[in-house]
Image (cartoon, rainbow, N blue to C red):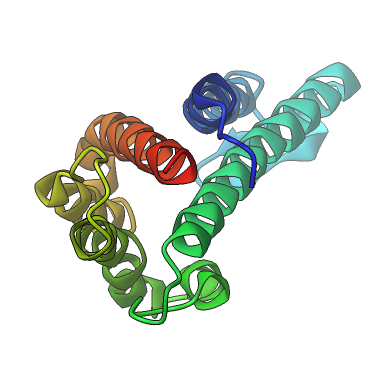
Amino acid sequence: MKRLSKWFYLGSIVCGLVAGIILLFSALVLLVLSGILTDYAINLHYAGTSAIITCSLLLLTGCAAVLYACSIWALLLYKAWAIIQDGNATTTPEKAVGFVFIPFYQLYWIFKAWYGFARDCNSYTARHLIKAPKMKEGHFLAFCILFVCINVPYVAYLAGIPFIVMIAITSSQTIKAVNALLTR
């Protein structure tokens, strides 16, 4: 496996999420301002064709940016679990990534996938006497809790920005750890 580019992974995940959220919010504002979205109902006969096309493009581009960020995040999770497979890991890379995308079950599995990775990585480095940066398990636990919070209506508004900060912190630690394990 090649070394992971910190700028590629962090840039793709954080910028993809932020850009997607901004684009989706812009689409929502345009939907309201153009009169398309009123009283939680879609009224296309009040809006012009250009407003409909612009909103559609903003929605599609925003969704594409968020999906791109999620796919890079899943790739990072896969590579992280793949590097510590020595027979003692608590899960496989395929399970770690695949089960995160199961609705409702993901609220439990995110703890196994990310917090479990931090714990297993620390155990792996101690077991093999590798000098690698120790994963800060508290950061990964906070990230998992925030992941659950962003799936709760109204709580998501409060947890959104801390979630993006924690995804950047945990992704950075994961990239450092994987690169350290690759150079052993």
